Length: 143
Length: 143
Length: 143
Length: 143
Image (cartoon, rainbow over all chains, first blue to last red):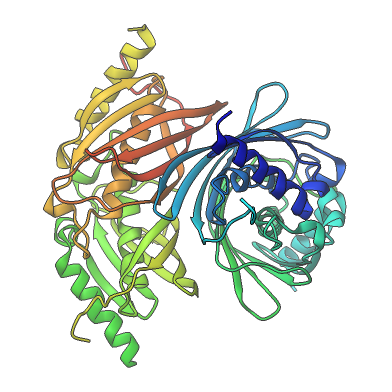
């Protein structure tokens, strides 16, 4: 594993522990590399909408969390400016959803990331595109 | 209040009670009318991201919830197909965020809704656009 | 008319004349004020797609032009960072499409604008959301 | 080349010839396969905005055209429902822009496609995500 990928994994772990949502949603980091993150979440009853499927906000939240890990992976504090999500299929209670996020472009302070959310059967649930902006400062202060 | 607006309010209340997220996020419905919803949520520690501001996923979730109430308000089951959010300013722990969603267009089965998320100082936190599709069936079965 | 609105109109006219697309698409400015623009374009045969309806790119281009006029209206050079469009109904050859763009939020260097595209019968063709970023410098150098 | 890819190429050529914009923008098809298209366009003076860079509408139009070829490639008439674009760098007069579009997901009648727009130096100009919906009927009637 390269030093850049090791740093990316440390940053993802750091964000996961520091964020309130990481524990609240029981986010599991499967892999984190430079410009890349793959994470998982199990859909619970308290994540369901009024149609009793996974709330779109939670599907977005999972993709957005992978986006945050991927766009902060170079240890420069980076925030989301814009994000878009297309919903393709419902998530169900008990489903294990995986969000995989990849960097598409990085130009100056702006980055574009694409993420897919897939269930345990390999069905695509949603596709996401995020635009990030680095605001400077290190995520991991000692590194 | 018109019959259409009364029905819209009943539907929003019905969705709020039926959805797991309504209680989990402590969603408060301030107003619900035909094609319109305004709801509020207080940012808690378990909604913060790794930068210790409100997770973008939770800001989206609030806007998306208002969108769901607005686009289901005519008692036809309707789902989100696509949504976009622009993030303008951070939310902080303890902030009371209000999402206000208005119908922009309704053509056949497709609708477009715009929502803004504002904090208690009146600062715009985010602006959201959602595309819905009605899938048929009543939300409130007896009505 | 306020001085701010007069300046906005001068800027829109200046952009319309300076841009190659203004003449190519025969853009007509109906109204331009601070944070607002309403413009029109007639759909020609060279704007049709393979289904013989107005190319989505041209519908977007009309909305994006109104967005440019609106977000540059304060005489600070401003560019689009991101834009989203929902397509609701086809445009036809000979249709006169009107794009109306309004500022939704302006926070620091970032702005969010919403535009609708409507045909001569008042039917909504598309709904657009744009995120802008000011890059400094005046649009009208002498003002 | 598979039969599916051959058909996709025939459809792209058919759309290119049938659409008014194909000639107006001088669209060149570099490659078209099932769920994929790569096309090019040279930026002309009549495609420039008021800042004298390529109009965002034309960058979108190029990506949207590749999206149309890709999402119609299975010979089922398909239209764009929603599209999002992030702008990363300006296009200049004389630039040869290439849009490459790939299918990300196809579920029932809905598809999601991602496209990038790159200039002749390999710089990413824009990243695009489109949501399509098939409406039935063949694009190439005889096939």
